[in-house]
Amino acid sequence: MTRIRRGYIARRRRTKIRLFASSFRGAHSRLTRTITQQKIRALISSHRNRGRQKRTFRRLWITRINAVIREMGVSYSYSRFLHGLYKKQVLLNRKILAQIAISNKECLYMISNEIIKEVDWKESTGII
Image (cartoon, rainbow, N blue to C red; front, side, top):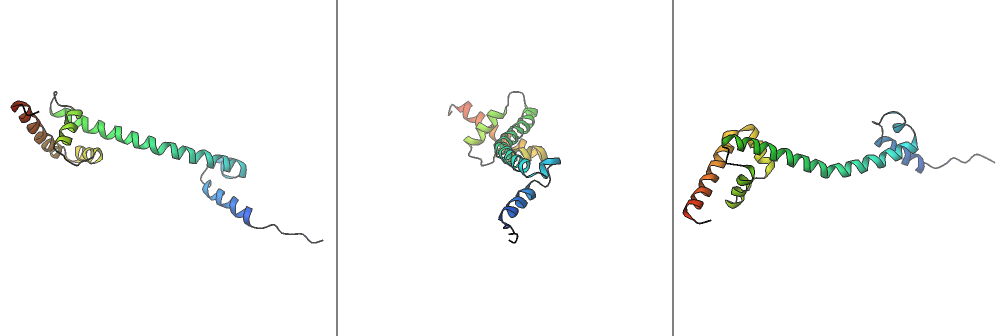
């Protein structure tokens, strides 16, 4: 009886998994069972860290904006600045504000001064 050659489907599946794990170290890129385990682990970590990355970047942006805002004056804070932005309906998100804070502080000073004038004027006239 002649030898029957196996199909290519299983081999194709394994090579696809090996391509995914080609940058892993040691047995994690060579042995099929450990490759599949590490692939599952890597995909779980990437899914979990997508949300974590969004949180950390938001914290970074808030910290940068707050640092520049507090340089202007002691009585002025990040929360008052953002509240003023929402009141004046300025459509700048935290990412853009952080980039402005880093690259061009004077522009952020101008924006915040306009908001301070508007809020202080309304408070002094009793509109708020």
